[in-house]
Image 1 (cartoon, protein in one colour):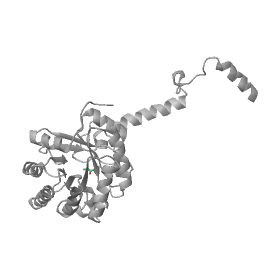
Image 2 (spheres, rainbow, N blue to C red; image 1 turned 180 degrees about the vertical axis):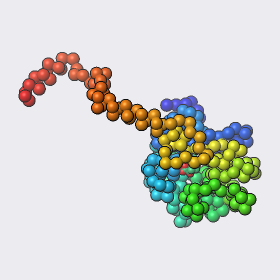
Image 3 (tube, rainbow, N blue to C red; image 1 turned 90 degrees about the horizontal axis):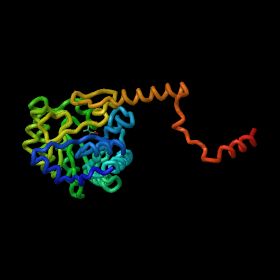
Image 4 (cartoon, rainbow, N blue to C red; image 1 turned 180 degrees about the horizontal axis):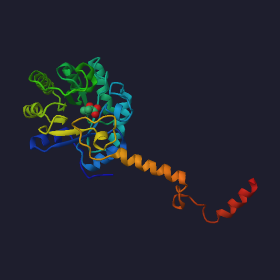
Length: 287
Ligand code: KIV
């Protein structure tokens, strides 16, 4: 399905910031969802490590592997040929060394056709960011609430809610821009802090739970369509209730099968013309 849109580049996203045009961003993990997102006009897609929870049913993002991320990114790329697709570096794909970081970031481009990678962390991952940039790869930083290190943060908690904690978020943001990253995601940060960072930085600053002053918004598709049921973060707006629609459709199917009303005539492949008599003969042979 072609939308007639030309491929979105990092320069387009920077121009959108300069023009004050908001950027829409959503996660996607599979081909059909990517097709829907492309048709809906999303500029950016993230194949987030949230796929661990939303697709695989893990409790968190930590178990997600590079191989899983690559398979899902490849599928999303096929479904969304013009969106700006970002692969999310899973836990331990970049933390051990610059070499790991470059090799794994490169896999997203080489094997899955991604446009960029995202990695969690501020000041402490600046070296990794520089190494990945040196390999010619577009980098999106991710600070504030960083789920891969939520253990250190004392759980999935909003960040920057005191002046002292806001300073750390601001320092992380400045370090990421200075390192050369071309995009920044703020997660679960007060709008006052996110607004200041958005004005201060020249790169697009996107929000998931960081309020309305950022250059664009990200949501997790499974939250937006009402598919993920374990919990709903405060920053989520549900636009549909897919869980209800799908469960109801399945209930009706079960009931139709049990009542013998599915399949009906129109769902059957009938014998070709002239073959029915031959079949009768064939059946006779077996009787
Ligand atoms: O994996 C993901 O979807 C993310 C978002 C929570 C920002 O990193």
